[in-house]
Length: 172
Image (cartoon, rainbow, N blue to C red; front, side, top):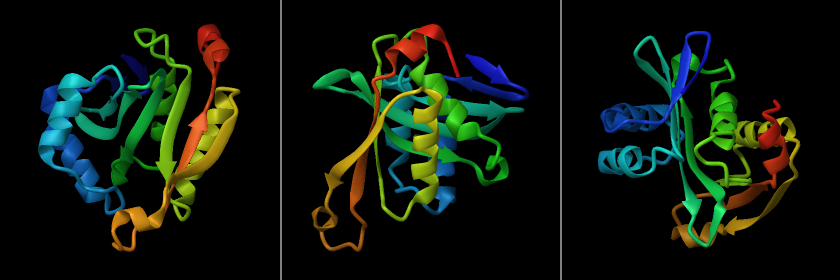
């Protein structure tokens, strides 16, 4: 668990699931999932997920998991910050905290997918790559047609890493 001012960064607890679900649904930009999913993420993946809490309120959350075929790679599924807390660097602090968690020392790469129009997420992940002094590559993730004609943009796969030597030194 880490704190920056009044913001506490910690693994999620099952009791955080409803607030995580509300944050995603209230965002208006993140793909909504069932409440059950956030309960499961908090219960079964707390070492690869994180929440930001401020004065008892959920300020932000990240869901992620280790890629089964590449256990040193952390796939970030969703990053969300409540509207009341945006613009304060909470998302980048959560990502950096996940990358540097002592209980997950084998993680040396982060992957995520981002749509071409989501410039804020592109800046976030490129900024984290700079702070980790790690290369970032983008490649084909999921083509638009795979989303069944729903009008969903393609998802570009971003790969940050390796960043192990920076993590071991604890640099920012």
